[in-house]
Image 1 (cartoon, rainbow, N blue to C red):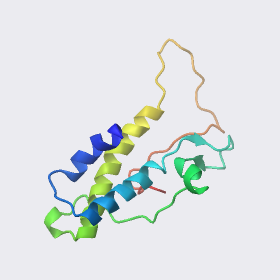
Image 2: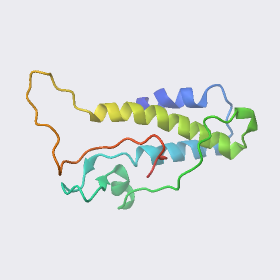
Image 3: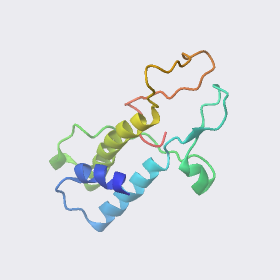
Image 4: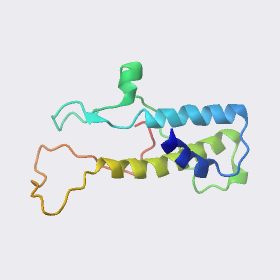
Length: 133
């Protein structure tokens, strides 16, 4: 919960939200958080599906349609729905950058570790993909 509040406050800023906007924002943020990868389902690199909290909630991965990037549109030109989407995108950018850093296991340079080889499972970060995909 602390991690959500830490990234939610900068995303919302000093805006005053209606009940519907806040409810929609919280629902979409929970969808973002429940679509994060926890562990690879199989060690087969041709099977890119990862185990997510959504699997425990609904039995399958959560999915969402991609939305246009609204981060560069001025706030006064957005509808209520687009304003909420802009806040979700701002939250996603902040949270995903921090979460991906926690997945990277840092070891001391003194420990010998094998390099990547064909068949290893890796996580690829793409900034142009919306949350839930």
